[in-house]
Length: 385
View 1 (cartoon, rainbow, N blue to C red):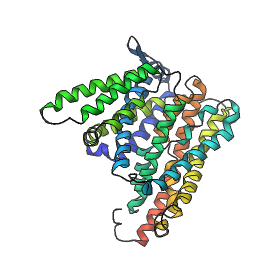
View 2 (view 1 turned 45 degrees about the vertical axis):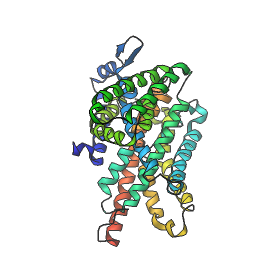
View 3 (view 1 turned 90 degrees about the vertical axis):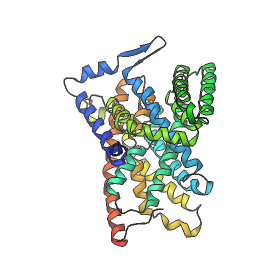
View 4 (view 1 turned 180 degrees about the vertical axis):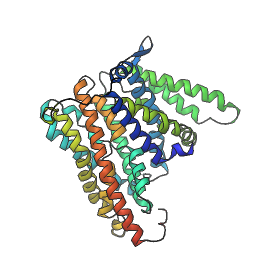
């Protein structure tokens, strides 16, 4: 299982699954896979398509792990004080505002303005994977800054999903979900000793009930995973996330990437592609590069003068290029934003894949270059921190 926990392996599996999905969607078996993806399964009241079971069901587990990591960083990690959090927070904000602004400039007046959240996301697993592959010898502070930035970016993405992609929520079901989530968190405080197994089974049942209530209420079901990860006691949550991580890296995320990438390539001239396509394609690599760099530079002035040079402008640009790898969360945002417009949704998926691919190439070049420079200037291994 250790190899599946590797950031390099996780990034490779994601990329391979997306490439396979895109390839198969454009072969003779593409229509059959699309039919399978749209097949409804479940029980009365909770019939979802196979694609939605993946994006709404399995992806909730991924968001549970993200929430556990977020809570860890907020409590004992790199975001546990205002002093630590303010710099990556300003960088993350820049990495959301600028891509959203670029997208709206390109596509806002075309009737596809609802797609502005798509280029605001950063894929933690992919970004850290690229850094691990090409960043040998870089100081650990760059990885820590990227991690803090990406965690905050995910927090913003969670808020966007909760606020902008919720329609006419059923308040009674949401209230019941809050009760079950609260019970889940309370029971997790007593998850030890001989009662650990029966309490664990009860928690799994409460988690499933919470997911169903949130999903049925009209709020996107992944928010249930976030809430469960935030309320669970930190130590048992860390253990659970550790056990779930190989499943998330090796199955859930690749399966989602494969499913999301099952789109036929439009047989049209570039000029016939929707403005949303160009908005996403440009805003992901360019908007993130400008926004995070600018936000990171401005945020550095909040630090004491002696600490401002620890992350250079070159380091900020490198981190910004990694931030342009939207991938998993951007694909989810695309599905939500254009749920009722299948043609635009397919074009948006391609734009996310291409835009993230451009960011991967740029990031690989910048990370490799900075790593070589750092190894020349610091021939001995960089100390952690």
